[in-house]
Image (cartoon, rainbow, N blue to C red):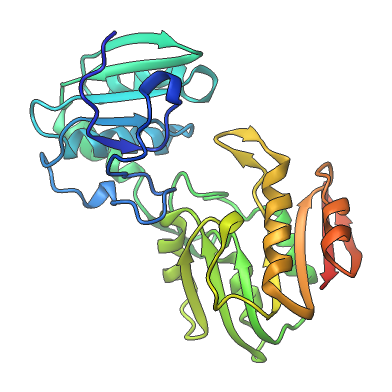
Length: 306
């Protein structure tokens, strides 16, 4: 199957399949500074290549948004690893009313369509994947965001054991703002920056954390370069350990290093992690004192003092 000229991108498909797309306009919510696909005017974009998300609701909504945004004669090239949504791509496009060509390469399924689907099905998929207020959570949330329909038990453990904090702090990988809510209960906290890669989660957290002390930053916590986020009094985090659906222990280790670089001497990190993740060594390497505060339900909670 020959690809059309690729002019816009959503995510970062493998180089060996699509070539280098780094210079293309980006529409993924996981890319800081990217355009928002849900804000693109209907029939305004030329050909788009999409690394389709693994979650069913999120993936169908992203496909529907792309089909709505593309010009009448423009191509959508959608691909995904077979075990992370690729095997369902054809069914997704069929459910949206599209005809397409399908092929396989390097363990990915690839679908190409110029069809724009059926308007009612496109609208329904977009509505299904849109932000919504969850009454049980008491939070604004959206499919595709981490732990979008439940409170992550690791975060719940950290909230249960979090002391009253004070001064300036950081919530690394802040998600929907669950940890930030708990931090800001303390009147001694003067400022808290929520750092989150996912633009959708950050947008939800802006609605969930309505406190004048809160500041919001879309950034990759592994490469945090903001000069204002130094000499802080505390950091809280429940770091991710999956990248593109695959377990990656180095993610949390990088978060720990970032936290160490952001804290003043004597500042404290409060971090929760799955019990099997090997974080003790990197914590002891970068902090003067490391305490295991709690270990429950498959999670462990650390306090580490810089």
